[in-house]
Amino acid sequence: MVDQLLRAALSHAARGWRVFPLRPGDKRPAIRDWEARATTDPARIRRAWAQAPRLNIGLACGPSNLVVIDLDTPDHGTVRPAAWDRPGVRDGIDVLAALAADHGQTTPLETLATETASGGEHLYFTAPPNRRIRNSAGRLGWLIDVRAAGGYVVAAGSVVRGRRYRSNDHDVVAPLPDWITELLASPDVPAPGQERQELGAFLDLVGRRSQYAAAALRGEIEAVLAARAGSHQRNTTLNKAAFALGQLVAAGLLPDPLARAALAEASAAIGLPAREADRTIRSGLTAGARHPRPAPNGSGAP
Image (tube, rainbow, N blue to C red; front, side, top):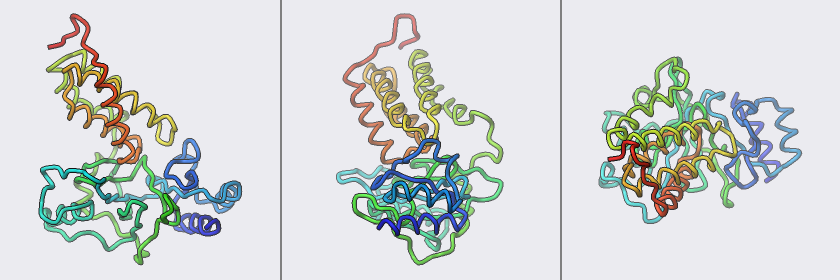
């Protein structure tokens, strides 16, 4: 297995994909600032895996010019959202097929793909020129996440929970289909702090109920967005934010669905895997709800 991991890392780098080490048997980065330190240099890769041969392999999507569509499987007991309560829709692959049919397209499966440890699939595409695609969680549909600029994926050859990530027989990486690009694309040249500007819609909704809650929401989401991609503090920061917003939800100052949506968007923007982020958000909101935080007098509470 040890030689396989090094060979796989070198093989990915030979394709021009920037790799970095993940913790052995895990999906989490083994280094800080992974996006900046990801490399195609065989000598650096050999040194890293010589020091810890069981390291898994991460691919930094943005520097590798990749957009990876992550098709997940539902956790046991998960209830399908009403929008995807359709016959035959059971997992992320089914959702993508339904989405393609809705747009008069075929399901884009003719590309390199990797089977994940959870039984899902990563579809690899080259990023479109002059369009900025960023991480997103559920933007395309239920159980579909996107890993692009600011994100990473666990690469083929890695082993998680005793299961190896394996690629299919398609060696060629297809361009991201135009119809998916249009659904995902951000403006060609994003303004600085654009993720923060996107909070405007959330803040407008909350501000109508409580200026105090709107200010608290802004502060917590700003804190999450400030946690740099690759930082080990991202999950801790997200948990603290979810706890604080859960207190406001329990006090009736903030709608629960809105808090979840804002936290999910922020966690996707900093590259947290959707399943990990969802667990953290649910746990933080639940814990915070046990300690309601009413607005101070004169704060604009309803």
